[in-house]
Amino acid sequence: MNFKAILFFLCAILYGDIHVFNRSTGTETELKTLSNTRPLYISAKDLARSFTSKIYENAERKKVVLYISGVKVKISGNSSYIIIDEDAYQMPEITIVRQNDLYLPAEYFLNLLKSTILPGINFDAKKELLEIDVIRFNITDIDIDVKSNGTIIRLKTKKAFSERNISSFINKHGWYYLTIAGAVIDTTNINNGLTRGVVRQIESDQIGSTAQVAFKLGSKVISHDWYQGLDPNEVVVTLRTPLGQIENHIEDVKDKWRLDIVVLDAGHGGKDPGAIGKYGTKEKDVVLDITKRAGKLLEKSGIKVFYTRDEDVFVPLMDRTKMANEKNGKLFVSIHANANKNRKIQGFETYLLRPGKSEDAIEVASRENSVINLEEVKDQYADLTGEALIMATMAQSIFMKESEDLASIIQMELDKRLNTPNRGVKQAGFYVLIGASMPNVLVEVGFLSNPMEEKKLKQDMHKQQIAEAIYHAIKHFKQTREKVLAGE
Image 1 (tube, one colour):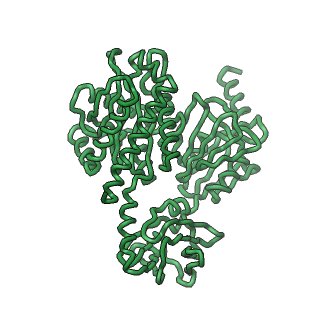
Image 2: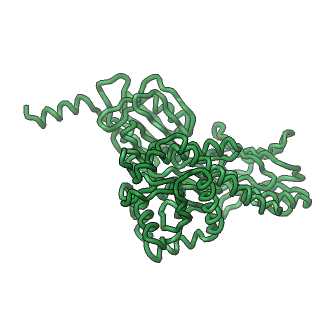
Image 3: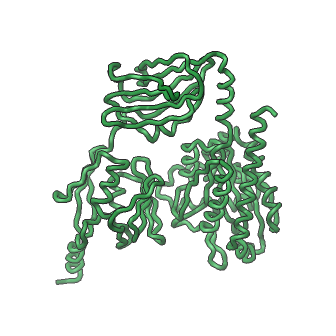
């Protein structure tokens, strides 16, 4: 038997296949399995492909993050724990690391997905068949408008429902309930809807074949009604309030602009280490530590924080601002560490999104933007040069004054705490800031290329000082902005 035949024979012993049929996409794929183990184990990478899911991999830390039906699923090698949308679940068996892949105990993991986020999957171990039928929601989104005499709720639907199947009422605790029999509701999207007017909270649930949405009302409603619109398909709810509640409308408009959600973006990550210092310090590790420290301080002060990454994974540049917009962020701060061919240069600087005016600003932007070479899809960046970049930055000009103010405050707070040079506020065309529908800046906290500053950036005390400066800058910016809203 020659070498190739032996290799083929060994692979046949080690690996079998599970046939996967994805009814939602009409595609058929195969899952590699570890056939020499009990229970049956399946490949995480193959599973992601079967779901047509995004996958972020950290081979060094033996971690994989999948996005299945928009929900984040974290898998760690040699661990029995799975994190689904920030909730931890323990399987009776651990995940096995084998040949640059993670293998999951099939029955336990797939049943976990079925009970949490994918009720439409079915696994038959005897037939070696996995069927995926992602549920097609027919209540998909929500929009709330405020009028002088009340609040209008629009539930976006894929079809019209029989009016006999729709009912509504307000209970004694101030909750308005809308129930639709025969509907399948996207609870994640609905529950994350932006509350306005008399609506203070939204809770939706799927109870068998019936969808129910509950709205916590913040003030008195003198009448309520609903009707169905057909172009587009929607269920429209009207909650009428006394005309005197126009002041509430003004407050709700102010609430929309209050700085209650901050998006912190730790640069680089995963297969992209960023800048690397003389002593091996990686930018991705330094900035993740600083980002988490700053986030912890903000959360303690009552500000909600969303991290574009909270561990060592690779996230494409434009996905970061997309995440920020989806989370209704009111502020986007991207945190990085700098590098320069001249190892004597040190200090901190904060950047705004505009085409670079100085050579060093252009060089910094070029270095940070070079991460796109590690991304699988690069077409989205193809036109972001020259005039196209100017047009992209102009689209964000509505936030430019606030971004300038925030950048100046960050520099001021860093200057109070650090004994390294203040290099000021600069402008450059950073791809990571493009598309942020909120004030946004990029902070370079120091130069890893300078050996002395690299040593400082490894020290917990120095990183804490940087985090505190970013925290105080955001708090200062928040107070200034909300003082204007209050008309003081």
